[in-house]
Image (cartoon, rainbow, N blue to C red):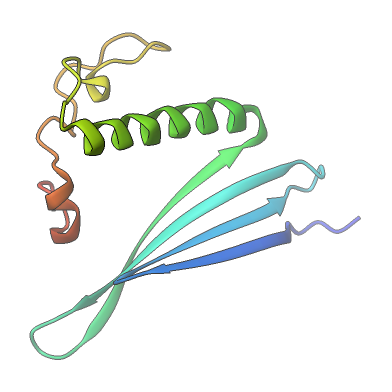
Length: 121
C-alpha cells in the first residue's frame, strides 16, 4: 500500500471568473473524502492576473448532513426566487449542532455581493 493519498476522481466546473474543482481522494487507510476548491481569477489594474483559492475538506462522516443541508438550501433558494418571499429566520445565525452563533459573519451578505468579493474583503 502506498503512503501517499490517491486521487480517485475529479470534476472541473467553469463558471465565469470562477472555477470549481470537486476532487475525490482516498486516505492512507483507503477512506474517501472530498475536497471542493473555488478558484477565482482576479485582474489587477497593472495588467497582472492572480487567482484566489478557497478549499473545503468534506469527510465521509459528514457527507449525508452536508448533502441534506445543501439540498434544503437550494430548495429554499428556488422558493425565494419563485415567490420573492424570504424566510423570517436567519439560518446563518443559528446552529442546531452547537447552539446559536451571535453576530454571524454573513448577516449582511447579499447574492449581489458575491461577484464583488462580498462585504468582508
